[in-house]
Amino acid sequence: MKKPINAPDIAVALNYDGVNAPSVTAKGQGLVAEQIIELGKSHKIPLHTDPALVKVLANIPLGNEIPRELYLAIAQVIAFAYALSGKRPHS
Image 1: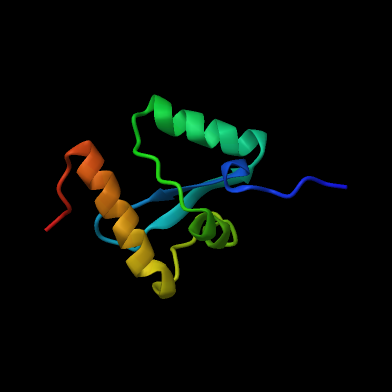
Image 2: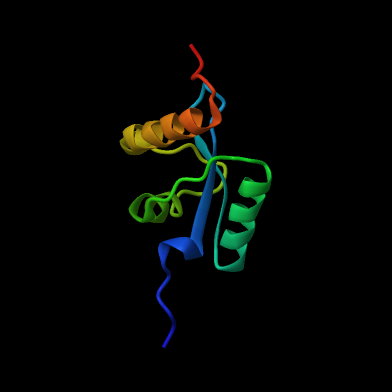
C-alpha cells in the first residue's frame, strides 16, 4: 500500500511581484518538495506551512496565477513573509 502524502511531502513556491497576482513557480512532492524547501532556505526565503493550502496550490498549473478565491489566504502568507523578512508591501 502506498504511503499517503503528508504536508511535508508537498511543496509549492509562489512568486509575487507586487503588481500581478502571485503565481506558482515550482511545485512537487517527495524529493522535489525537499529540494524546493532547501532552495528556499538557502535563499533565506520565509517558509510557511499550511497543509490544506499547499494541497490546493499543488493543483494550480506551473506558471499560472492563483485564483481569486485564494487571494485572502495568500495575502496572509505574503504578510507573514514580509513580517519575517522586514520588508514592506508595495504601495
